[in-house]
Image 1: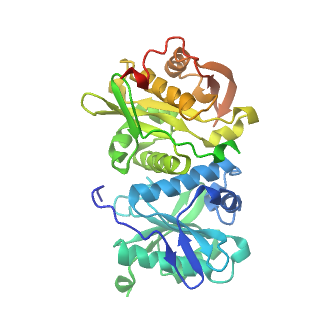
Image 2: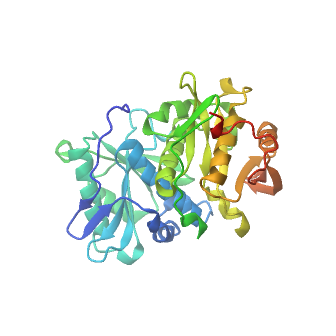
Length: 186
Length: 195
């Protein structure tokens, strides 16, 4: 993919209960809380406690990624209250752990534990997948989940993710999943 | 909170030999080349191969830093032919968390491609950024974190007027925290006013 073709994702995505929007610096405190929850951040399990600066740097990356790639991670907010309850979106970091054929944006999400069990991750995830395939035209997406994280593996499978292979990342056994556009999954 | 303040830096600075401009999405390949230089892998990546992935991470962060804070890191170009020679600018880095409360200021960062060293480019770019940080952004202090074995960068920083504050270990590597103050450079020859 070259820089002349930057796909453009919508600035916001609306679902029945959620509004997905870009990140702003004011989201830092809320996101820091999520980043400090090991259940939401499998790959920070190296004993490091994310600091406020870590959160700011990460939010900067999310904002910068949208500028760099034309798409990225959204802040997931509740339409009813405006509250930020997590994130969901795509990041293409061109990570060296993937082969050239595998390379594709990674689909990821995290919903704060106060909002678990209501199908909100699935609702946000479905909306992002639809934009990714229908609007952005990706042929496939990747998704890396720690095997310990059974809840996320469940969500990924329910959303249509199929296991590609196992790998060790950040000293953890992980499953690499692939998402294809709905029609080619048939 | 000092870091919550959005400070609008100019998108472009000019010096005698260089143009510093805000990073843009099209800089990824140039940045990747810079990230593959041994010194950048060693000191930015702490010895971990940086390559494409490092460049993506760096550029994404730099672009977002500009958006979220209003200042950031510049792509440094040679004035005569716009050749990409490196990067120089200010970051509000994660590692400031290790610093004391009176040390909560942006850090100066810079890196030049191997082939561009020894021409005074780094000092010229850094001086322009420091002048801008003190006069336009109004910071009273700019910090700098340099590994103790990176003697070339330590010398460059001290020539620009930096003073060592203390030693600090980062990811197992001994560093020095250095501090720049306004008017600290003994012979501030090149600045953005030099044009």
